[in-house]
Length: 291
Image 1 (cartoon, rainbow, N blue to C red):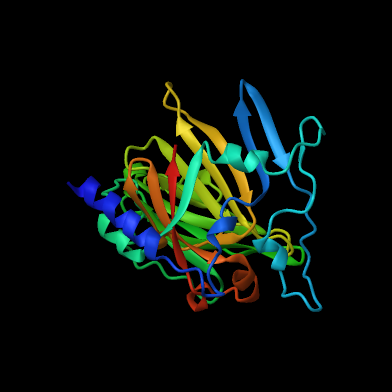
Image 2: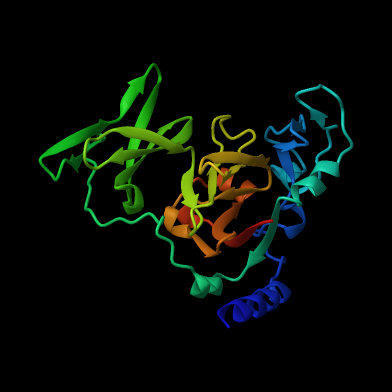
């Protein structure tokens, strides 16, 4: 019954969704990308659009190109051969389906043992450091922001992943990286670049973050999707750099509504670049279905 109600809700919410607000992402550009990698017939394919993505001044609105089709000719980075524009946007749709939904879809959130929780009151002091208790609180592990030449590697406590008996810590230098820190011995394991989102059955891992390494010239949503194989090991399915929207960096803005459908907040890329504080931006809920 819940599944039937969810389907009805999605149909209704899609029909009433408005695109009149300039702060909203046009639904027509959800699949626009800079790069798309996948495997087909045991061959790796990596398609890239060499778009010019700098700030557009003058009469045109800034970043207007982010909401229109790519103007450059795409090519396969492995072979160097040019490919037909638009073909691989359709190929991407064979892997995932993207659509906007109403925020009331949160009522259909599915229980997930892989969820990130935050039960500890971990504070970062004025020196950019914090401590995590390990070994039944008999010891602790220390994290501190570290200068690297003119830049700094920062560390942030995110929460706990109880299913792994670990803490989750984000380290950031140009791009994020998320570490599992074992509660018993303090060992560190990189789990993902962006927020690790495991499906409720643990089969899929969605890794997504806003690419800021290029200093706001082509920031976008970088998405990696993996699936467990018959040996229970994660294997990459697709890697995509979307160009029109940016995902939330708050793990609380992500939730699964089925074993292959996840919902999360996104922001229009033009507004995201102009205003880095996500709390001041108007968001939309995007549903990603793994096909």
